[in-house]
Length: 174
Image 1 (cartoon, rainbow, N blue to C red):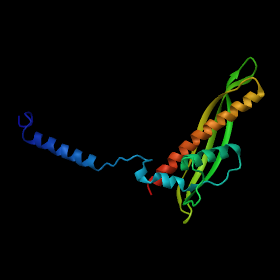
Image 2: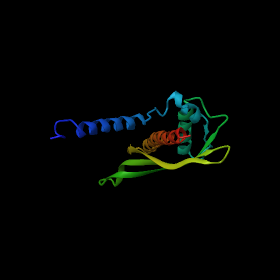
Image 3: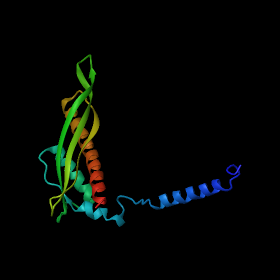
Image 4: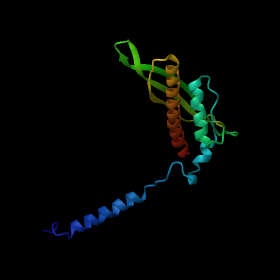
């Protein structure tokens, strides 16, 4: 009877549970990753990316430079260097049995990256990401090549977004 009417131990237990819950919530800190107060814009703008020797890799590099600096261009006095390796491939996924040709495909762009602090050579973060873009193969050969290139560009843009998020997360911990 003591516990059923909301008095005694039951009321004390509910009060203690409420206080513990408030204490746990008070310890949480929520802040936007890209807020100006966090200084993330300056940290991202201080990342340099060396030249890459293939077309898709250069597309990823250009997109990353734009995303890091907000369109301001490459970092002049870089505090970090992002070593990047990019590969791309396209394969067919839908075969037309009448003509024995592929009607649709999938383009995959993969990137391996390492973020290094320039002054100490310390590795801040590294990882591997990939992005996929679907593509339709038209009958004309030039149109097919252009469709593959467009799919590579879409996947490169998505890969750059993923890498930017990883780099921003790593830099926010510093």
